[in-house]
Amino acid sequence: MHIIVAGGGLVGERVAQALHASGNTVTVVESDPARAEVLTGRGLQVVSGTACAPRRLEAAGALHADVLVACTGRDEENLLISVLARRHFEIPRVVATVRDDANRWLFDASWGVDAAISAASALVTLIEEATGSAQTVRLADLTDAGLALVETKVTAASAASGRTIADLRLPSGDTVAAVVRDGTPVRARRELRLRTGDRVLILTSPGAEERIQDVFYPSGAAGSGPEPGSPAPRPAAGPEGGRSGGAPGVRDA
Image (cartoon, rainbow, N blue to C red; front, side, top):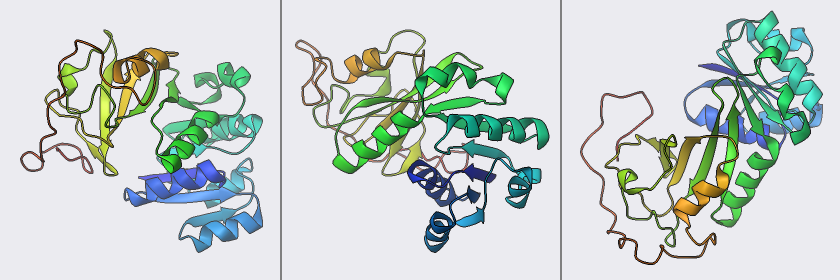
């Protein structure tokens, strides 16, 4: 896919690098010339200028882009970029970050936004990744569907470590969408046994972070073990079988 990332700050760079590593064609639009030079030096394709200008988006390939991610440091810019992407360039999928939660209600289909991501949550995820801490974080609101995407990390202390997805006591309506293992998406089959280090992505209702946290860390503390009386975690199994015929870039574990 051809993806445009509008904004090359900390979050924008991380998004661009991850999408590029997955085999997508990624172009970053960055207004700060010095920052644009840094990103270019790190191997990214960059268009220098503001993504609020249609000409800059067109230079980044907006006429044939599949996805645009608006992640500048200003909510008003991200809204304007989203409207341009959807209404002017008819880009099929638009994702935007929200800096101020008071503005979250604006980030919906009327502004061309398919999914709104909390910039604070994205930064928290970066910090957690750097420190190795285990927390449950809301990554995105899927406004059209009335759902949220929540991520939690499995540690050795987690009640989920060594258990299969089918063993998880998730509330009705909550669904494990994917598991990221060693940087690679793994198909979330019911029989998949979770391991320490796995990142579990769950589709749930907005505001459900606390109940998801309780499933993986029942006492509410990241360093706690399983609930008293719960089944003992079984040893993690090794890789199963070969590749399935599923979507490219997703492997069975």
